[in-house]
Image (cartoon, rainbow, N blue to C red; front, side, top):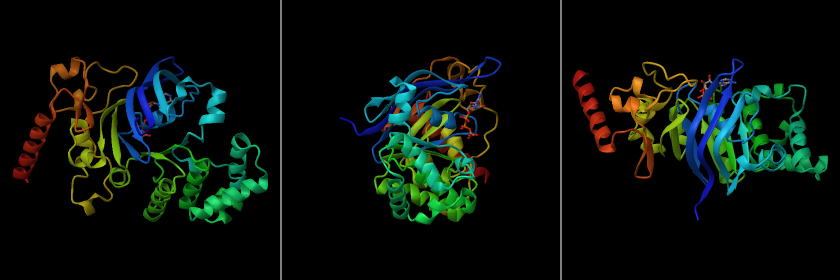
Length: 342
Ligand SMILES: Nc1ncnc2c1ncn2[C@@H]1O[C@H](COP(=O)(O)OP(=O)(O)OP(=O)(O)O)[C@@H](O)[C@H]1O
């Protein structure tokens, strides 16, 4: 009996463009998320993070399409459910998704309580308006958001408060998995901290059972998440604990990505993704072999043409032909060369 709240196996989803081309944005993704844990998703812009998040909801609206794979939430494969089952049994209850910039998408003409009432009409129709209010007020107070927010219009709230409100609304049905896509971007540092604290409170108070956190801010991922997966061109290229991923990355792409934050702790603040020379492959037509090979200094013909399997080291998984010892030795040697040059 495992402790997994979410298991994703071989998930493939793609966009069909107006020109009838397929963009393979999530191309064979596997990972698990344990009960009570937080998982971070990292990777350059366009690698498929948001598409993965959206795909995990099991609801595919054009141009996004499902191809294959399973999404098992607490034992149930939601890819087997129809739209009506998804709407009433899964979305918001089992899994909830806060898209990028969700706080700016709130209808400005509605008071916050109306968004909650609308959700409850679908999921808890037996509740009266008064009961919905009481329930929402209690939740908001518990999360230090004050129930006065419920009577406000979105535009009356500051950016940070609006974002926390969106998170509180999205988690009001106690979803087992909460996915937050860039929840802290465009916020000042104080508001970012409040958002992080809110997400931690949701976990601590068991209003949610697990959290998937997508952000460009790698230092935040390191401090907030238990595990990190790194995506590249629609695939997961490495998964490990936050500490392993930051301080002992194995995949050459993870190594480059984390390069900018392997500096003294206080120096981590403010570092974003390091620019890596070259560009990822076109997701309409991905190359065989390793997708990072064109940008990798260790790539051989085998990397570019061969089939690349996952390797498992200390419960960490990475997709590369080289063993961990070889990779670590190369990274050490590079570090020494850098030291000599400096
Ligand atoms: N509606 C769409 N139609 C066609 N292609 C799309 C659509 N939305 C995204 N894509 C493509 O899918 C790929 C993955 O995009 P996605 O937004 O998931 O990446 P991301 O890692 O979340 O990027 P970012 O960090 O910039 O949000 C990209 O190549 C993108 O151009």
